[in-house]
Image 1 (spheres, one colour):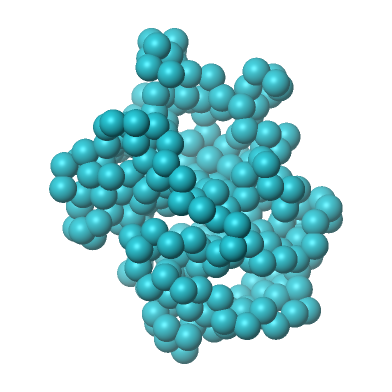
Image 2 (image 1 turned 30 degrees about the vertical axis):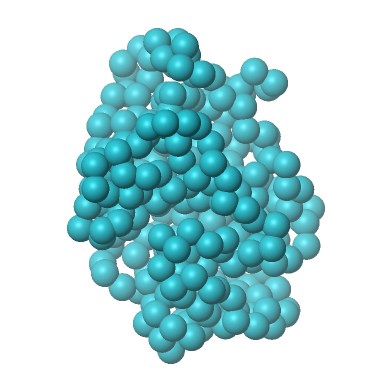
Length: 263
């Protein structure tokens, strides 16, 4: 499996990751970079979705409703809470860019258990996790405590320059609740300033999987299993959005025994 996915181009449909193209079962991720006046649309079929306005503004109609113009932050590194929209499986949707914008579509199997609704910016508060060089800042969009989706778990993370996140190393790749759950995961990365790079390692304890990747703005990393820490070099702030899904909508993880003392 190729874990590092580069953008398909600078604009339009930049990423189109499906379970088939990823070689797994649950998570899909699509990303559009649109100029004002351009549009994106789709029909969900068996998947539920969360549309995340990463930056910019778009007029969205979906699931038989005109949701108006969603989006407020014009640069993701403003760190303000995102405007998002949950859509149940079977929905159709269309977004027309009011400004240049970046729009993510997070996908996982739907069960018809939740109605379409706006998520954020109300109720999403930037929260610090960790301390010192392990401090990072979280915008939880749809995590376990939020009963807003059938399968999807979605969050945003801002890692200050020189810091680490998704660290100490942890994994969620076994279906053994309540100790650990099996969740596939995508990371959509951005760097500030934009020409920067970050580092992400994906590895298993037995060494069967061990890849370390330099990630740049608009790259996506797939995490099918194993531990997956990220590092932001001096001078470059890192953002990523996470999409997770698996057989159970619970986020339970186990630390790498070598680094569990850091917990």
